[in-house]
Image 1: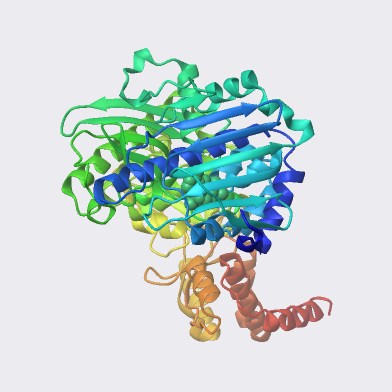
Image 2: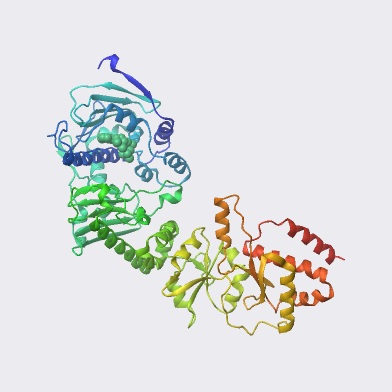
Length: 614
Ligand code: ADP
């Protein structure tokens, strides 16, 4: 290694930040670095196995695909070597000096803010290699690429500001990582300690792992075994290994089928939703295998996109080994596979939700966005998925969720609709005038409080043949409710409606007396073809110049004292009556979330108060 070949580089700013965090903030779980390095070695050999199918010229082609780990107590080093694809000079710079993932910044902030176990997050975000610096004061990466024109190189760094790359010699294909252990982490040069770690974390690596020459792991495809032959500990270990997880999964699905396609699947549902924590969109992580050979670790289009939070393995002996990622999505077989499995997954959720509703509720709160996305986008599974939607309603306790099936079980005989209202929070919906009449008649109203709910419900349309109806829309018929006090006479009501229509102008299409209201004098309804307040808000958020004329139908409550007084006032004191009428309209628009500009409202309020005080 001559001085002349030495190249020095600085780490990209994000890497420095990352290293700082990894080295100084992650005090617990330092031992996971070994799992990360072994997993990189294994990935690299998977890649090599793929190349063997397509490339003729692979350097050192005959080398066995094994991982060799050696401990040296004297020298205080730990070495992890593989015969994978290795790296060229360019790849060293690209892979070990920069972070390509756009989510790194999000990772950094989320790490600082969330109470999540760092170990759990490291694997999810591909910062695996850098975890070596948690225990090493210096890391050397000796590498020879699989390419015939590759070089023997060594990358060296102390993990602070940068690294160097020098020529090396006599290397075999692959990567050999030498960790010079920090004094306080010398334990990782102890054979027994390292053996224990391999057994714990890497038992399921698909390549032999040898520690100081002795074979450690059992290469085992758990998903091909019979359910009854797998212990809870094995499942847990597999989940930790294959899914880079440290905590228990929320749910698990392990099944085998022969028809219509041969399938062995072992799927885990994690207990945390990384997207919810502000991370980038999760990549599909249910790997596709054919008879234990990995086809694609992250197959796009195999399962519906909303299922991207699932982890695990699908193995199908019917999938051609040489299927490429490009042709996969066009393959009828793969589509069939995806459809069979997604149905099983949804069934599993249904069963679990029934078996332990509270657990499902807690899970649902973290993952609801996925289920809603599914309802809106996964047409073949829409109806099955709708059964999994959960919400609060006028009949649920605060904080308790219910589903449409339960809603229908509670519904009155002959009720052929499911009523809902969309708004920012339960408290607001609860006090909204729209809900009054439904409550008074014992009709349950579903409360939707998520910004995307409206869109989701619109695309769903109905549940079990019952139409989903927004109670803020006009055209909802309710039975008369007699116990609601003396009403204004028919003729007076008609005159009052005409007076209001004449005086309120363009914003009001019709004024009628109605049965919805109990405690409020007036309500604004969006015409059946009109845009709801939530849609308007969304349009405005997307386009600041968005403008539309708000047009509503007014419904007055002929039993309300204010309405009765107004009917008198329109003849006795028309000026006051006009002011009150305009104010009532604004009040109704405010309740509906449709008042954009409150300047006139305030002026009018002042005028009214002046009058009231004489
Ligand atoms: P990740 O493995 O999640 O991509 P890492 O930080 O662990 O992130 O590794 C960064 C990159 O370095 C990998 O994507 C890979 O390209 C390369 N790399 C790491 N270890 C090896 C190895 N043993 N053999 C070949 N390439 C490797």
